[in-house]
Image (cartoon, rainbow, N blue to C red):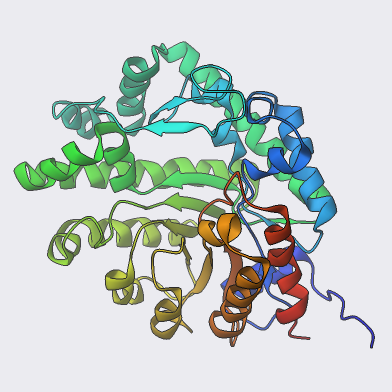
Length: 379
């Protein structure tokens, strides 16, 4: 029997999937992240601090598993020399605060204050983030600017490397929802308290953050040439906040973001970590085929398919636990169910539940990739 071959390019396949059109096979887009360094046999210190070693490690994963056709890169946001200067949370890194082969850590602490909402509302997101970086990292505005310029160069480099492999960039630029931006800089606990204490002020801040985020992402998309963006939105779900409060404060902000990006011809991949099962119906209020819903294993992805199939593409969600402590048979069985049920009638991007864990078993990752040929061919 002759093996079936790809008849679409990686970019054609991804675009068709987002548009809910027929494809030759399922898009394969695991978030490889720190696992790549372990696969390549280097320490996580080397992976996080040495850009060329990091990129070479990702190349090695692709060489071993060329069915990996779409790359949801995030490494310019993970690069340790820059994460120590700019970002939305403090970090600890392998080789400095942590052992050489430890995973990096993000630390939830209160940095900005209630008074900084006024700074944000009056002067915008850039001024607010500048204040955060000064307090969190001791970075002055000039150092922040240089770090952002360097990050932009690495962003372009990643996209170019992805294209040279023959992959599509699942997203070419990276952003965040306003609730994530504010809760990460303010801390989740303080942000949620603020939503009850000063809801009108918080809503103003959410609006400004959203509008500035749209402008920033539109400028980046014009420069990079890829009109798909990662949008981290992990802190708005019913796991954290009531549906009543979500409807009043956060759903309008989500609509503002997705509609605003659609006006700029940018497709957001909504990276919705945490349990969004109770929120799924609300995604029907977003414009059809103008966004992708990415799930991490906590949300019932099969329920998502029932509700949102025919409305938006769904991305996910082989859980971290399966890839680390599950068996090859476990991974194969779950992958088969994902591809045949969530992938039925198209609109499915086969991925990991958030990032592939650093300590994923190599044999489980092989089972993950093998499932594409076994179950994901439609032609």
